[in-house]
Length: 269
Figure 1 (cartoon, one colour):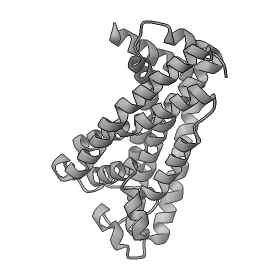
Figure 2: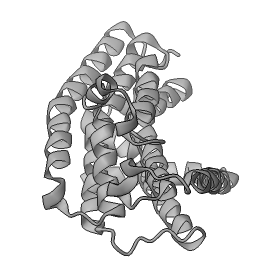
Figure 3: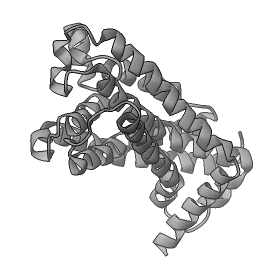
């Protein structure tokens, strides 16, 4: 029964996505645009000696490519649940869904599963374009370590998206804190430049953002071929974020649902 419910959510979202056939080409075009832009930025700085890039192969473009790919994945984790809630409130389907005997965790995770599968496909497109069009060497990558880092990225960032959805249920609008966190992650997490170029106090602040550790682990797995044993620090930190934040976010979302039901505002937007 559980798998049937999950599959029904995935099929629903796939059919909805299929009704907008140009969206896939738009995403691919956007990925290609970003890669071309940072490829030439990489050529611009290629002649400079950047010791901060040495742990990642010494080239700027592969460094930025992994950052862009994971930032896209993180964006889905932060925004997908709240967008699903907003859409359900706007269309009037959220209330009907929440009165079914399906548990809240099942509804939450099933509602965003297709979006994460699409985000994973985008990461593969990033890597494929980088390899075939720009010659980024990926033979040294550790696929298993990269997969674990992606899973931990999801588990450590999805709770923040669930908290954003709880905010939406109560206040009927988007959560600006989550949007700010996404911007801070891009700035302090090292998407565009190594953390070592930041002042020491900003480097310290970046350690409290899960994206910093997720991106470092994924870069090491993809660009340096490091395995899980060598990424134990990132694995432990991201696991701690997930273990602490996931129960808190689910409890907050359940509280928001109870409040919305009590006030009769589940269908109000």
